[in-house]
Amino acid sequence: ETGVTQTPRHLVMGMTNKKSLKCEQHLGHNAMYWYKQSAKKPLELMFVYSLEERVENNSVPSRFSPECPNSSHLFLHLHTLQPEDSALYLCASSQDIQGRTEAFFGQGTRLTVV
Amino acid sequence: ILNVEQSPQSLHVQEGDSTNFTCSFPSSNFYALHWYRWETAKSPEALFVMTLNGDEKKKGRISATLNTKEGYSYLYIKGSQPEDSATYLCAFIAGTYKYIFGTGTRLKVLA
Image (cartoon, rainbow over all chains, first blue to last red):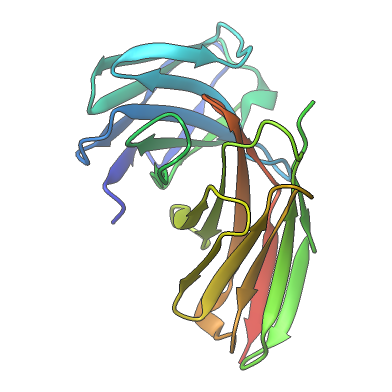
């Protein structure tokens, strides 16, 4: 148990569906992140939130829409995805965004777009 | 483009062997270097956060060193055990929000 919980663990969605991924942390961390891992590629940072404000969006397509309603919760809203968006989506949190403290990761959501 | 290389990509060792992996990163804009262990079907778990050139850190049988001037970090496992089997990831932190991961070294320890 890392203190970061993601739901659902697995998700299959059609290209016209709308779905959301949820991440929750009760570690008292100030920063939360969404990462994407595609097959045989490194973890790719998508979004960073610091104190509930989005501070980084790494050129992610608008079909991915993050939301951080409070410091403990992070969502990733998905709509009109493409099959190439199939991947493992990981949420993480850390005490700071400077990289001086470790990140705690959830177990990820395995997304398949059909 | 900032690039982080890890080698080898995969490795099989016998139980009891010692082993080491390399993480290579750019020698400029260094903020920190993280090592994570990622077991199948689990979350990546932090091993070390290294921030100073010459840092050496140890946790049980696992240790790491850091050379920021030449842009590399080594991870060592002494007396490998089957439970050490995992993918070992390094992440180069190049600034606020600039987290670049390597593709990992997949270790399999054979009993």
